[in-house]
Length: 316
Length: 287
Image (spheres, each protein chain N blue to C red):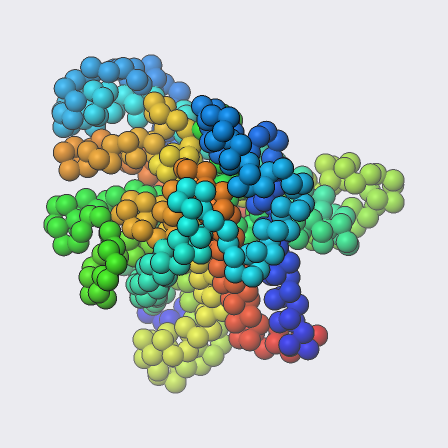
């Protein structure tokens, strides 16, 4: 039964992804108006427009084009860039690798940034430290990521030039250099994610701390720190997973902004460039990938939550 | 202090949030309305001072590359940011509420289909969806204020619909809705006179929560070059334009940034206070 639940979720995710591809195709290639003019602009010559129509196979009916594209994607053929003429997969590969590095780094920084203040706040709730951290959360919550990234840039790349202001990655950049290049962008992403998670985590921890078995532990004389780390935190894990999944959703969009600020050659800047140049095959591939990552992350969080919650695990 | 002591939760760290938030918001609305009249220079007026001059008493946020007074531009931008954010949110919440309430009330297969449909929109990371929508409308409409409003609504409507639907499912089971149904009221009428009044506090908090993030959404689009077009004094766009001046004249970036942050702090405090007053819990972020 548990397996059936999982299979259902996976199937549902796959269907959603296919529907997204349909929506994307409709929005970019079927919307009223001439696609070629939309891509090349009004000043384009008749020959250029004709050439693009041929490349995009615009003479064929839309359903045929969609199925050709979709079957290509399913076989790993993401098409060819309209701008550079290179296969989209070749362009996407290194960019995605860079962004994966950045995201993993951001995630590593995010965990302590969210957990430590939340635990401190839960133990000292109502105290001045809790209040101060709450105010700090409030202020950070109001600073958009593009501004936070810019502030970090002013602080740690210009006033104190500890890190480079442009995170340009050349081929053959070694690990240590890569870390230095991605510290500020990763820190920006980590702070934004931690701030979202912090308030929820604090409230959750406080709720768990008021439960029976924590009170019992307290009566047995266990120290507060141990109670929080060993007993309360695992109980707050399932909701924390939920907020982490939400944060992953943020991360996929957040890299677009942060990579732009630091000129980091990742997935986000690739999407922005493709959108600017109206390079349809690249746009389609990157957006589909972003959605796939998001859906995958949510699915994973769902499955973890099912596995962690006995009531759900044994249901049906 | 005992760990399990319940007193801690009662003493909220954000008490008085509603009053402070409302005050900040009131100031922002006042500035948005009066700003264009108070501003010493026009929004696009060049030659306000020597380009790249740092902050001074006459030019608190300095002068940008084109010789425009940044402080005046911030004042001129208030109603742009506030207007777009609020109207986009209002449109999104209205559309989302209608879809969600009808779907939740209907239940069954129709509800299931609508839910799957909404999931398609929610499953594309919101900023990516906003950017694609901006490109899909074509080069003429993209960057138009109405398009920005539409894109904000496109992001919010499916998320609001999900919340509204959950509320409607629960309300639709109550006796008075059943009575209305037996009386022969159609689904639209039931939604309007039975379900909507009972979902009001949910939708109110939802509106406040979405409105809190809307200025950032509008600003992000502007910052990335997919929002309003220059020379509109939209704050996100201004931050992007003046980023190159960061070293020479940081206040040209910090000024609009400060205005944006104060607006969002006000909205967040207001939302949090409102939610607590209505006995609801909010998690910030787009989700």
